[in-house]
Image (cartoon, rainbow, N blue to C red; front, side):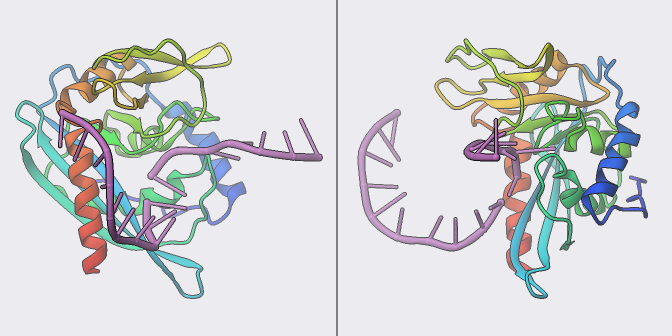
Length: 230
DNA sequence: GCGACAG
DNA sequence: ATCTTGTCGC
């Protein structure tokens, strides 16, 4: 698929904040997004030991595309690179996006939906990784985080499918969604071009057996393997 | 001011 | 994220 990494990639926090400021208005919150996507892609990144005096980290990204109906892999690509941007809560995307996009652009066909490893709107400035990737690719994107970042919730049931709104101030920024009975929930938030209901529907559909979507699990294994071989 | 803080 | 063995449970 055709997509490029902006060549004005920030090198410091101030620049990164300006980028988020300029891009956050481009997020499509309308949706409803794809009701019956043909394909769903999972994206993840793995980090290796530092190099060059601890200034640069080795990183491998993977994207795994599944047939949305059968959850069978139909395509997958990887990319390796170096990360120089430091880990700063809220600016997380600036570390992973370049390599993730490098892997994504190798796909012959664009997926119908992107399931990202991280937050979407559940972000202090409402522009987490999933929003950022969605805006840059123009594809529907959902944030599926393993841990909450901002927002609180209460009264979450123990059954698969139970959920509770993630609230920050007076806004609902996402949902804590239980994908498996008695297992810690995942935190779902809209990334781009899809609404929360539809997003949670697809997350649940892609996670029939484990806590995380099958696409994410496969991407996780793949990028780790690639990093080891790199 | 202090602590918390996606991956 | 990553550093890391065994171990309890289905």
